[in-house]
Image (cartoon, rainbow, N blue to C red; front, top):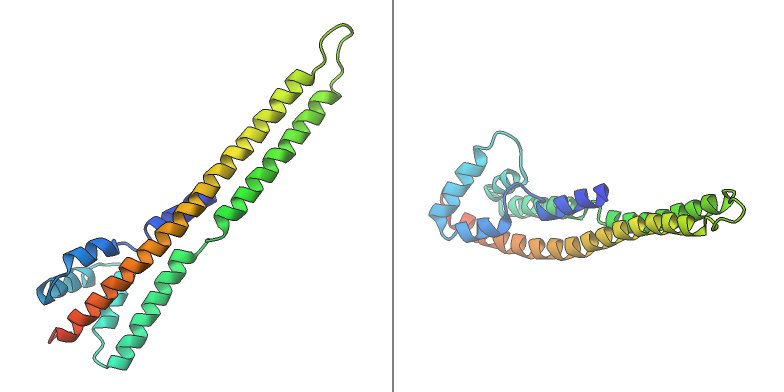
Length: 176
């Protein structure tokens, strides 16, 4: 479940700044220059800073290649660990069944006293508890998988719109 939660975190925030908010913030060349200066002032390297450096390239072919490289880098970041929630769901289900079977077998192997009720009820409750925990883990992992798939698709579309707008503004900017 922790690995699936990590995958969710990468899908929710693949970059430091939200592309949708940047898209809303950049309307004209003045916004573009202000945002470019603010992102360039960041001390540590970020995807956004690399994108703005790529957009500042003078040669159009180089600029297009560098922007495409940044989009590929973002796609890789958003897609990393994409299979993890499905794998975790499978492991959680299998582990729930395994521990349930072990619990049931262990409970049934305990000697029961003459005249007392068999330990079947206790063994069954223990097995169902293990199975329930496995199913809960599976449900969480499946939910993460479905949510991240939607989030990644949505963020990709917003990022493409942002890059298209920034390309138009960077072409019109005299100091790009």
